[in-house]
Image (cartoon, rainbow, N blue to C red):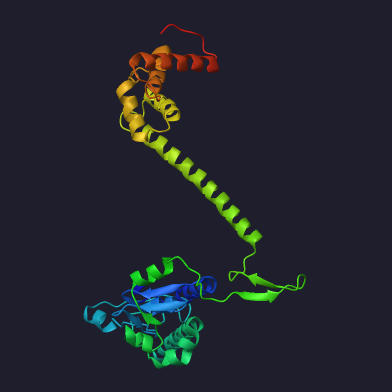
Length: 328
């Protein structure tokens, strides 16, 4: 956390989300600079608050600013007129002094937010910082160890130390005694694993994780293939050229090991651009784009082998599309 705070509206709702998260898993808030006012309210919902040695935290209070510009405007010869409906619509506007009634209303709003702030902190911190104790701070801020002493934070540390602690692989202590219970059927002690997870549930969880991993892998592969094709079709010299774009589609499909950039470069170098009139001979066009695919085939060691591969591809292409044989 590194913020001096902000608007009261929404801060306590966000703090509630942090508390909900902390109820399900360990959640650490790190005062990595400053966590004051609304920022502290949000962090108070964490399982633990760690402050750096010079971290500033606290400022459990509420402030509302009213600026009266009426005298300045009067000196400048400006007279604002607020036309409104509803007696309190323009309460607190900056063009006139606050009346006693409006001041009391605004103070009531501030007090209400303050009580919500204290309640929010107490819900998150519990006995470590009660509402009464938070009120006694009188919105002071605390640095490092002083925040720990006041119950504002739990310990002094750093972002790096917290990260290392959270990412450290959990280990089971060998010194912990194993629990035992008496089996009603066998009448003998039965050792219970400390984790308390049935083997069937463990296996089901592992299988579910594997299935999810395979699904994620397939989705990632599809995205990569799509990105590769888009890169090739959008390359300079290919985009907008029907012959080369078609050749890219063929080559990308037949040579999955080539990157999108390599596919585009190969096609630009080996496939003639479409004629500006759009009347290029269909047979020559088929040969050129299929020859490009043949040249990129693994094991194509010579031009002759490439041409033979291209001829075979062309024959298969014509057979699959029902095209009549032509001389090329």
